[in-house]
Length: 374
Image (tube, rainbow, N blue to C red):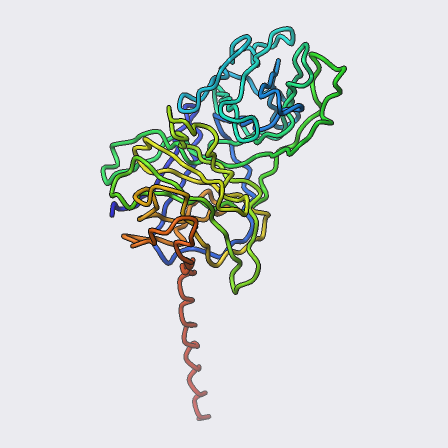
């Protein structure tokens, strides 16, 4: 196994975020992440339109705001290169050109109820995103987005090797700023080329990072899981994550199930759907977001419908702490697995605990007795 070292984000403005992957045994229990951090990159992932059967969405503008409602400058908005989608009108950059008369319209890949469209926006320097607005297109209200997530990049670079001089893009290090589900009320069907009210971001939540390192076939190019159920410390009913996002998920790039086997399938309480990925070169990071204060003690993994050699064999689980540190909660190496399909791979304990409290210091010595009187 490769050594895990410090992971540091070096932003162009000099803003530095330290993200440390620590050794086992150094983690606190979940205590509510609430750090308001700055970022240079956000992703808007749209999963549903007002009339989802159309399979199409459109936007004319998106704006982000920081302290005092100051607008954040945008260097550009693009398609994430690992997750391309069909642009049917305009260009992706149209949503950041300041002109509500231009727009970007795109079509979901796969079926309309499982596809998504993802747009990545870059800032010239690091900003704390506190609010944002989106603007409707000039026509076709059925294309208005109704479900989406906004994720921010926690760190820009991280090391995946024992050589600290070798840095590559940290594709999986993301944090959910906001989630909207079936929100058709943000804009009226008659309000075209019109901005929404502010959407407010939140930094108060629990974040778990599941790093898929190696499959049973001993390659790091393909992987499938149908479900991961998270259980509270001490036992009880599973805790449902509010969302699951895979920042370096290539989603079966070029395959027939591209875009349909998305990471959010891992929380839908059924093994019928699955998450699948191909061609990741340094593992795949699944980011699970929970309500703040959730304390997890174990988790169950369920296999997919096919391809036993793509079951996970080696992985790690981290929890995000307030100092932007990822602490290891569990490490699995050479897990034998179960070749059965739609079955539980196992229940895994998140055993890491805080370092033992050092024993109390001995009391100070008693003062010497007073000298006898002369």
